[in-house]
Image (cartoon, rainbow, N blue to C red; front, side, top):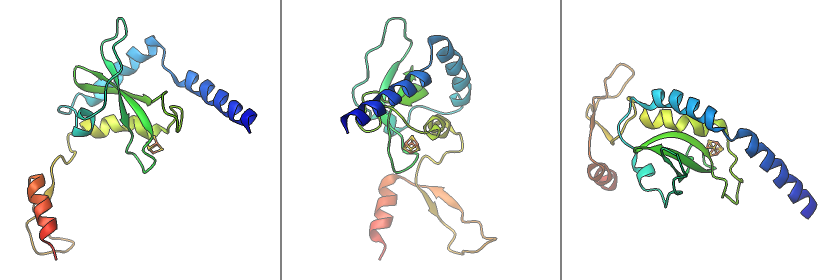
Length: 155
Ligand code: SF4
C-alpha cells in the first residue's frame, strides 16, 4: 500500500513538474492571458476574500493567492497569480493534500469567465409577468438584499 502511494506521489510530482511553467513561458502566457482578461473590471468577491497570499519572490511582479476552482463540484485547490489586483494565471495548489495540485483544464478558463464583459454580476429580476417563448422577460438588476427578500417572501 505504502509502495503504491509513493509511486502515485512520484507520478503526480512528475506531472506537476511537467506542467509548471518556466519563467519564459510564464511571461508569454501572462501576456496572452492578460489580453484575454483585460476586458473586465476588478477581482470578483471570491478572489478578494482569499486567504493569506504567498509572499512575492525576488523579481516577481505579482503573487500567488490560494483559491478553489468552482468549475464543478470537486472544488479543486488552486492558486491564482495576481498582478496589480488582476488575476492572470491559475495553477494547482501544490500544498493541497487532496490532489497535490492537480486539476483539469477547465480551471484555466475561470479567468475568462471572471472578466467576461457579459458576465452577470448582480441578481436579475424578471419584471414581465407574461411567460412564453416570444416574451421578453425584461430582467432588471437588483441588489442582493432585494433578491434574498424576494426569495424569502415566496410561499
Ligand atoms: S479543476 Fe476541474 S475537476 Fe477541479 S474543480 Fe475545477 S473544473 Fe472541477
